[in-house]
Amino acid sequence: MLSDLIAWSSRLSADRGISRATQIADILSARRQARIGVSEYYELELFDRQKFSDLHRCIGRHGSARIDRLLNNDYWRATANDKILNYALLVHFGLPIAETVATFNAGHARIAQERRIADDDALHAFFADSDAYPLFAKPVHGSYGKGTFSLQSYDPGSRTFVAPNGGQVSLNDIIEAGRRPQFKGLLIQRTLQPHPTVLETVGPSTSCVRVILVRDGDEAFIHFAFWKIARAHNITDNFSYGRHGNLLGSVDVDSGEVRRVINGLWPDGRDITDHPDSGQPLSGFVLPDWPRAKETLIEASHIFPGLSLQNWDVAFCEQGPVLLELNTEPDLQVPQMLAGTPFIDDRLQAVLNRAGW
Image 1 (cartoon, rainbow, N blue to C red):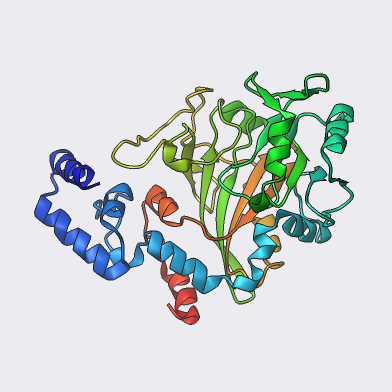
Image 2 (cartoon, rainbow, N blue to C red; image 1 turned 60 degrees about the vertical axis):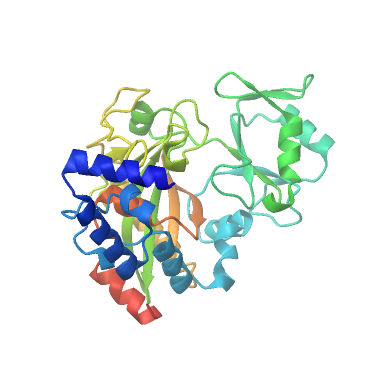
């Protein structure tokens, strides 16, 4: 790590003309004002003082975790992290979600009228008889795309599925994932079909917009938004700091227009203008049904009054915006870098102050 930091410092001096003395002074200031680490100073581009002149309003991993702890009640986290509970609440209030056709090894809980499957042979029979393909399977408790499967069709004889890239997935792989204690079972859902303009621009993989929403008493406001843009070879849209090729695009919360798009963090990440697979422009693309999505998210936020920092994944589909997940414990520092503005503005500062910041 030390060798990386020295190399980054030298590169910043050469490319931007920022002296080592200035970098050290900035790093010490960021550490003192916001407990931002040395590597974060570089990776989050906090050296760009035209964008980040107020370091005390910027955050790193420590600040992100602290905001989550302050604004989210631990007793309410299960309503986001348990997808069966979360979906059941959203269904009850008539909000749009992906259709779950079955659960596997998920106990007696139920979202609506989906089939509950407990044993391996019954799961095989379900997949053999299903006419709902393509399907998507994901954990009841899970994150970062772990334990997910995109299933195009099933061959009962070999007990294997065809994946979107033409590869194969074994039924045993799905059974193993469904029985991992940390996943608490699997949800089996109909694959969402993107809105035509989204399909043309980024392809058929579900590319969600992450919307960071803040509750302020009985009111709620959308604070930041960014588009998690999947590549053709990936079945999920998780950015993972660009390790798997996916992209991240900042979204203007008023207009739904995509602004800066990146494929990784500094110093290796680059700004991207067009999608690498489709060749279609990303910067300037306006998300379809954005006003409707914002209204839906504000409505949904009131179901979870114990979570004042809500991180929603919404998919823009043929039928309109679909709520895919509600998350806690987010990485708030990356959208700050992407948008090129400190995460804490006056309105959020007031909310944080009342919470004991």
